[in-house]
Length: 308
Image (cartoon, rainbow, N blue to C red; front, side, top):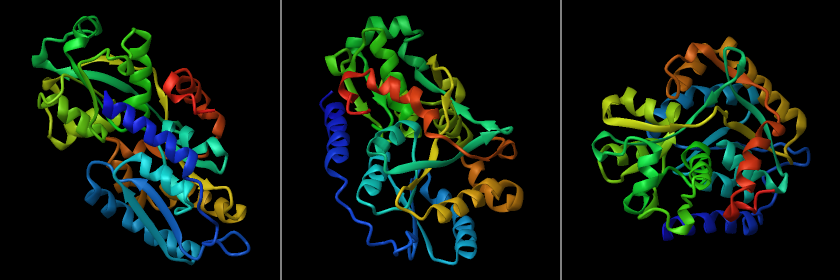
């Protein structure tokens, strides 16, 4: 419980005080000498870096400048990099985008599409099959004896969505509804915590947590019981700082939009890290308004009313 409050307070504090960077990294036309892209490093940073490296070289050749990818261990660090102007582009979860965009200094430019439409994913609440928790009703009855595990504090499917759902059931983590509430740090880590019995109940994403853990062979499908699944959630955006040159950003956006068609050898290895059928995916344009539903959910939770 204390850890939950501490993480949320840290998020709020960095949003309030973390905007003290400057634009010295841009020339008079708003173009950087080196393009920096910050992203959450997933549960397998080595594989991610290997898959991104060809794209990094592709961007360098097309933009005529060095490109650096910085990998973080959580979304909070990505938000902090945006606030401090230490990055030009960033990959964010829907919820971390809502948090990071409060000062209107970033714009979403790209998201993933599946079969030509914006891709969706789902939040899940799950348990180890040996806990004897077989339903949400069981979860509610036994909550005072349950250790609950979220993923990352700024995760949409691993924190915001399941937290909002549990609150509607009268199970508010901030009001000692559970024996203990912790953050595992990532989607797969939350799945592993539940599968190993370190926690009783976990929260994650079906596509980016449970299915990846199953494909890697670190958990068996039969070891996890899903208690609840959310409605579809809008996919994560890639964002650009608003002080970047607009034509420069447009060029980057166009490179992304054409990547699946023009450079499948670069695109598919990266998407394969996240999706079992990468050939169905591509990049699509995205609008800020697509995340209004996430804003509404976040603003409905008392401790997250900093989200406007």
